[in-house]
Image (cartoon, rainbow, N blue to C red):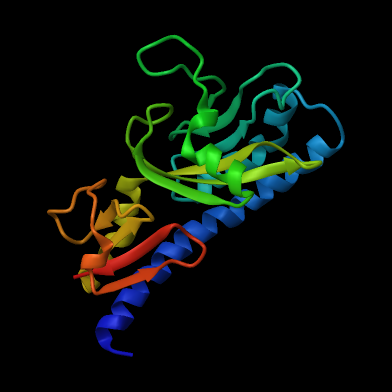
Length: 222
């Protein structure tokens, strides 16, 4: 293995460490909710109370800005849509959300971070995108489906600010001159100051592209 290849591999390891660590924490939340739904109808207060201690501990120990449970439509007995989601330094609860520019309830079930786990039955990492629901900043959202008795009753998830990822990843990326992209070729974080978050790249133009295990992310360099 050449020094350059080892440097690129170190970047992949760092990306996997962060996101696989988040998905492992989400598994704990998922199990709590599956057990709850398997026992019968669940309302928003019960779901919120069940996961709140785990989510607050998660927020206090991980490099994330928000986390929680997002209900599938009509999964809860008392409300069609609901977010048991805590965010920010004060860990405030976001229970409902309005669509940007309106006062209408937001149908988050159309978003990729919800639809992809629903379609595949597998965890997913979505982004980068501007999160108009929670932070109004570029984020990466890790989500995993919560399935009870054959039905997806929502997702558990965690948001990482791209700004946070820059702090975590840039030292390693700079050593390799590397860039992290998503499966669509959009830049997440780059050692190249000319590549802004969201920039679209032609992956076929890069001689070195290494995928991150079980993540829709790759690390590349010229």
